[in-house]
Image 1 (cartoon, rainbow, N blue to C red):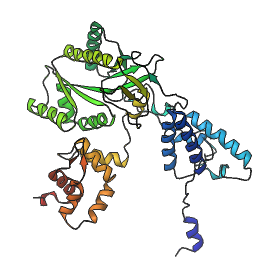
Image 2: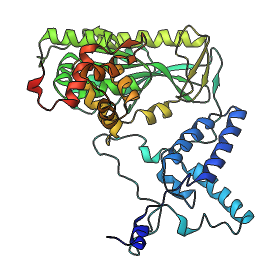
Image 3: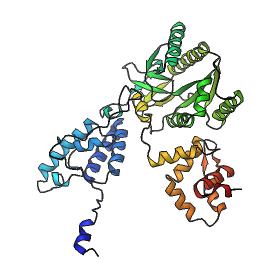
Image 4: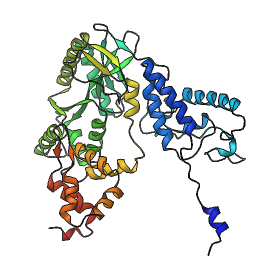
Length: 421
C-alpha cells in the first residue's frame, strides 16, 4: 500500500486560470481595439481562446508563440507588459523560470523557442501556417463605391494534365480580357477578390470547384469526395460546383455521375454548373467576373473578421468581406485531425449523411464518447434514435431522417451487423 507521502508526490497540480494576467491584458487590448473599431479585436479574441485552453503557466510572451494565433507582435507586447509588472511588483514570482509551464531543455540542446513542425512536402504553400503572423495594427478597410477592382484568382496546378488545362485556361482568359492571377489556393480552383485602391485584398462570396467528369468519377470512388466537399462547405463562401465534360472514359456509369450532381445540388446546396469544354468554362468565369465588377462598383465595401457576420447578399448596399489572408489561413488542409474532426469524417461515410447533417450531429455530440455516453442513458433503440432525429440542419432547418439516424445508432452500438433487420 502506498504511503501518504508517495501519494502526495503522485498528486497532479491543477492550475485554475494559470495565465490569468495574460488573459486580463489581452482582454484589455481587445476592448480598446473594439472601442476604436480596429480589426485587431478579432485577433485578440482568437489568441484569448487559445490561451484559455492551455493548462500550464507561461513565464514570458515568447513562450506563447507555440500557441495558435500568437504572432511575434503580440508576444512582444506581452513581454513588455511583464517587465512593467515585475518593476511594479518585485515580490511576485509568477514569472520566474521555475513557474514556467514549458519543459526545461536538456543541457545538450539550445534553449530556444519551441521547435516548429515542418510543413508537409505534398503541396507547397505560399505562406506556411507557422510563418503566418497576425498583423495587430491593421485598420479596418473601407472601399467607396466605384473604387474597387475585381480580379479572378486561378489556383496553381500540380499534375501534368492540370498544367495543360491551366495553360488553355490562361490563354482563353487573356483572349477574353479578364484580369486574373495564378496563386496557390488552399481550397477551390477559382475565386474573386475585391481589391481596394491601397492594394488590400478582400474575398468576394463565391468560390468555384472545377471537376472534369473523369476526375469527378475518381473522386467518388476514392476518399477525396466527401473531404473536399466538407472543406468547401467550411470555407464560408457560396460554392459553385463546375463540372466540365471530357472525352476520356470515366470510371463510373454516367447515371452515377448524374446522381452525384443532383445530390451536390440538393443535399449540399452547391450551385452545379455544367460546361462542355475549357472554352465554355472560361466563358462562364469571364461572365461572372464582369457581373461581379458591375455589381461591386455600386457597393460600399468594408473589411471584417470571418466570425463577424459578413453580409453576402448582393442586394445589400454595404458588403462586409474578410481578407484573402484570413481565408487562406482558415482553409489550410488538415493533416492531423482533432477527435471532433475525425468523428465528423467517420459520420460522413454513413449512407444518407451530408456535410450539413454531420455538422449538426457533432455540434450536439462533439466526439464518439459524447454520443455513446448519451446512448448509455437511453432505455430503448427508439430513444437513441430520437436523440438524433430532433437535430435540425441546413437553411430550411430539416430534421435528421429517421432511417439515417437509425443507421448511425446501429453503426456505433451493434457489434454483430448480421443481427440488424
